Image 1 (tube, rainbow, N blue to C red):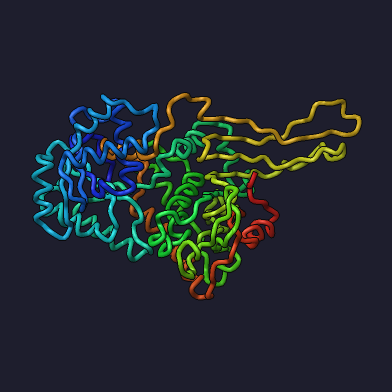
Image 2 (cartoon, rainbow, N blue to C red):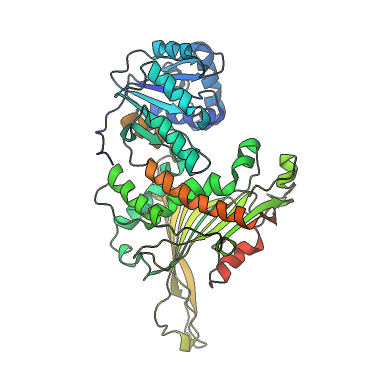
Length: 490
């Protein structure tokens, strides 16, 4: 892969899809927060574009309303908002018309000082957009591009998209976004593993029994019905977020903290994922779809009710995965995600192996395996569950109990919790690729996911029903229980 490009902040930014939902909820608030904290280059201008027919004043008014709606009250300051809106401009654009890109180029102006382009559009438009940018002189050596997921629906479509982007933007100027990598707790996985001598000696098959990664949602389809029914949980969540978390947990120590070294180690893990064959998929993967039930104290309808028609799309999936290398041989990685589950939670649970001999057994003391829980949301913390002796004179035997050693990032570090996009957008502006996904990572992830989907098709596997408000189908419990493992649901 190419060497790291030196970090250099650009002087201009261009947002495609500037009037979309992601822009309103995440991109504009994130850029405002960076502006308010004086982290953006002082002269940075931000040009928005989409099909919406705004002029500069109309887009500024639109952005102001988005900030008023989605910023917390303690971040709203009239003067700061006004100075941020002064950075904004707008050009309406039809991606099928070359003249639109020429007007866009005229608005953006000279890009010799650097331009960061962020594509928050449908991936099916990426090729047209990239060709239009190249035609208008907005894809030269001083321009870098950020791509919002999804990047395809399988390996061939992903390659097609990446080939289209690579025609104008080489890998060292391409930034593939996965907002989970912008979360502070995810970045802390690296500090936890490689900044402490305590963990790394046992962070392997000799010390760890299993790893569980859960991303659970309580919501249903919301406004994503069309997209979600074509995608499903496996491709929407496992393909990008969960496999990236797995790679960070499992990778070898990088030589340096930079984009090339870290991503080199991640891709080794992703390429080492054991492909699940058509003959194994029944035993290693459980798809599910939520039925009606109680969620958040209220009755909710089924997926088919919300969609308005029957569907075979999975809203839940549990996977038993293995990494075929020396460090992780024989250690199962249990991956789970779904909608309408019991609680909203994103976490990694590492269960360590038991001590080789318990000296407490003869006195009635019962040991449990140590567990480390890395919670990503809604709270952010790292918790290590260890065994301790209950106070007492022990005349009736020794009583041992699991107690938590907690590191609450919210309590320990008093800084405001940042939106994940703040870090990623700032890294795009400054040219740091460390937290972005490289093409070979994406293709390794799709290779693993495509094998599962091919197995489903070969065996005619349909998602199993589960009641809303539960933890998914009963067979997802059996996926771990037959190995003597219980999901970390507390």
